[in-house]
Length: 447
Image 1 (cartoon, helix red, strand yellow):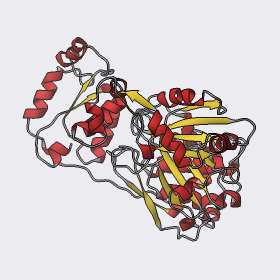
Image 2: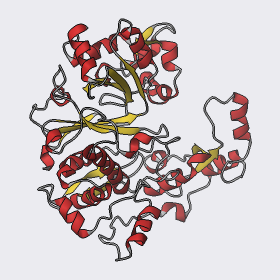
Image 3: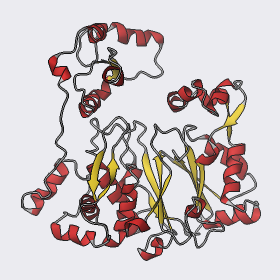
Image 4: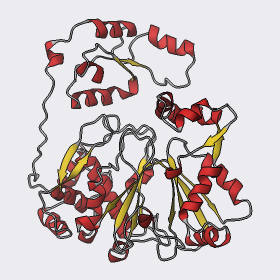
């Protein structure tokens, strides 16, 4: 679209057929519904040259016309008047729905994709007004802007609109400043990536105790009202205040991600940790209340204990993650003290440095990765370090799996066993399409 709209160069975008609805939606959202396109069958990756050639010699996977005819006509035929019209958008929506029976309203929310397909609390005026008592900010104040992917348009939203979704999630007004802080980050919890990524939120500071968040036993599970409903509100608001999140239309996660239901919201166990809290590492005062959003949560690998062979196990565990992003180590306090007191990692930074220094892959294996080839190879060929040097490395040369600032340590758990996990995540220094991630935001600003 940019080649045509900015440079006036005739272009035909080629897509896999499973993206047809998304392409139509995205081009319309960007004001070019008539942009030229052609479609090949899916899959494209890991196909032989003969199979790919058959796609080109065959018919377009959507129109059923000869594929090359679609391409040639797109490059040579002039744009029609209809193509040049562009589109306009009506961004306003009614503040209230017409009164109806409760059963009908629940059905309407469900059928309009305004829910996560679980039952909700209907956001009546009275309930929304009660939620607004949780903040000193005006109902009409703009909180931020959200979008599911960088190629989609931003949608702006207000405190009241955020409150509507907080009510739907079943949240308490005391949780509302934390929910607003997450939404003000402008990082959506409903990403459209085909990788099915979700978000994870770590809360620090006095707010943890003030609203009864769980940082101990079962903190990542379904056992705490604040943890669960803050995360659910973040997700519901993300999908509703960014223009939707509908599979095949504005959400393309291949398998989906169960972490997305509550965005894995929990508090760090600061009291039982041997190290300074995560938000202090990020430059905040210990008495400040913050939330940190990690984007790109794909998987979680777990083990227990810091036994004699922990280094070998850790290398295997980290090695199973994606090199494109980063990693968050979630350590039960027992494990944190073992690392600190017995292994000599007196700060989180020293442990993260060990990971950077020791978790490495042969260059051949590092580059033989779909995500790395898509996102990091272009940076390497453009001369951006350290990826440019990685690309020049010999096939068997060991190179770091992660950038140093992409390894994080958080203490959480109830000390029923020496449990620790590693979560894959795209973090603050990662190449993420210009979107700032791994971001620590102030909750106090939204009280």
